[in-house]
Length: 346
Length: 284
Image (tube, rainbow over all chains, first blue to last red; front, top):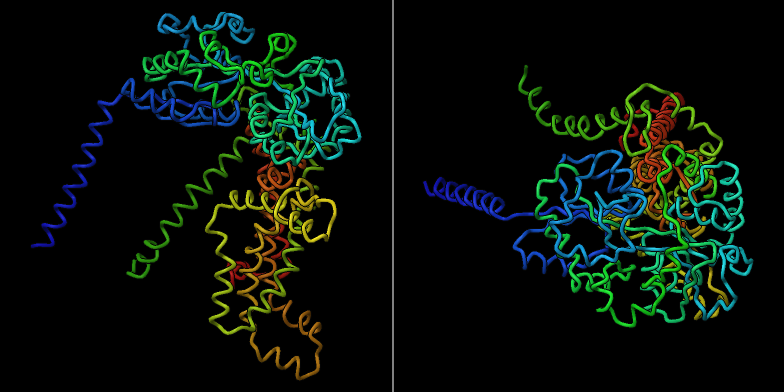
């Protein structure tokens, strides 16, 4: 008898816990955010939860394609807010994967510098709002390398054998090879791509590694003295090693803009708007930029950022560089050519 | 139905469901989409085309296959060379010592292999432990390049896959009757002769099983190439991963995967044709 009592009490407890947790889920509003890894510090999310009472379910991805795969393979309405880059916005608009944004729901929308609005991938910002910007940059350890470097061509110098780290991104690196030879970064012309291939094969003996996870570590540990990487990574490397200098090559840099977007059929759209509006607040964006020094596009935040950020060209990319830069564009089926070329280089 | 049969089904059911749901079904899906066409927007068009299989035979991708086979082959050979002396030495120890040593072989499995790769990074880098020690003791004057090259890849592959060679080989070696070795030595066979005439033939199933378990994953372990090889080489694993993630060409990635399965199947088929028994592969 005692045993039966014990068992029934245990079952009762388990059922009770299940019921209670079921209840709390219904009363607590949630917002399902899918974002790049290391882009928003955890503390910002916790403060948002405290302020609004909303619960943030946060998951991450590490490439635009991963974001696309996650959103398109999940049940519609799984995610409420995503952060795709420029060309991925274009693809998602084409595939009708995004909800049109109602900008009047965002009080802080005017904080965004109009310079960054109305980009070619979403001309009227109907589906996306800029979050941060990034650019590739050449970072050089001046303790070991004193040569003048102004162009991608300078990277071919034989003295840099096994000393250059590049991000592991086929569109960006092949794009840079195209820029080095005076071609369009998004070309689909096979002859031009062939020349880019030969250029990369010439560069190959100088390449230490391709790494997208943490190319800054190569600079910090002095494993390599030169790296072509995203600006924020370079700025973080500089915090560890002040001998690092940043160079924006004359041919132009590859640009990337990450944007807020709401996937089609999102279930908690109001909460998603609340989250976007919170991030657009000057003081919140300041915290984000201080942790991950990408290019800030929020003009209200700009005045809050100190000289460490403002006078560092790796974090605060000069406007002239952005005007001289290029976005990766969606090239449809021709991505096949790039993919094959990448296999040939490696 | 007899009671025994019911129990048999009862105990086998979880395995059957597991294999069907998590291995057979996804494989069928991969086979199916390998005949589709990519729309290059991350989606697929469901038609029937063998274009993906024709594309695999492009010279560029064939060379990726050959490179992968070469890396996997060298890895397997190094694993064999390390494992044989090890398992023979272990098999001569006291049974309790044997158990302890074999447990030690398996201990690294308790840590995620990705984390162990990052551990190697700390050892092998230019300013890493190995170089520091060698420089400090004056054995070398310039740091050695131990990673971001082919030796780095091989260190990672051999380190990760070695237990898969040791375990089957050990179970084969431990079944050799000691009197066979005694007889060989009584009849005047040298140690080398004993090894090739008695140990190798007796452990052939274990050797093949181990080789298969080392060779096959070595074709696909892209994270080792990425971390210790500096992403400078492309093997089948990277190629397949790229198709699914960057090139947005799932059908082509699926076609390469199917060919990989075919290669593995062919190796097993060759083993059977040479007189090997499938039962032996289950670990004697």
